[in-house]
Image 1 (tube, one colour):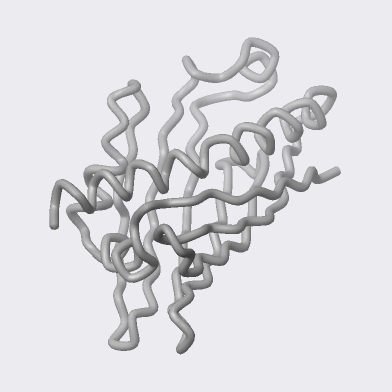
Image 2: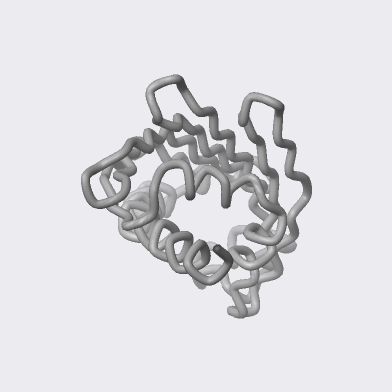
Length: 168
């Protein structure tokens, strides 16, 4: 069973500034450098002539970061492959899709995003679904992951606004 999550986040950065940052490799290297012991690799960044972009990156969680009950059920390490697409429209907005596949078919996440201008900068709206395919603990993990994503997506916009300020 999948769990849904939704939310909004505001940023002082403009839609154009955020979209331009998303199209820069140095932005992704900085964003993915978590320093938390998780190894994250930028696999590819493709920017089309119209501003459409696709970024792929992989998070290697290993085993040490898995919750105890999950570590007992899962053999080997766990990695998460992310694919983000961001497409500008003619009205100053950027629509996105964020897809995450967890190694071994353990789960997935798919979210739609809408970044639009707002008086103070921009606003991001998002709606997604999390699916965890681990017997007995899957439902609880889906609920926890969905709540975590809804809380953490705004921090990406905060990081991006700061990054833009430092790299303007």
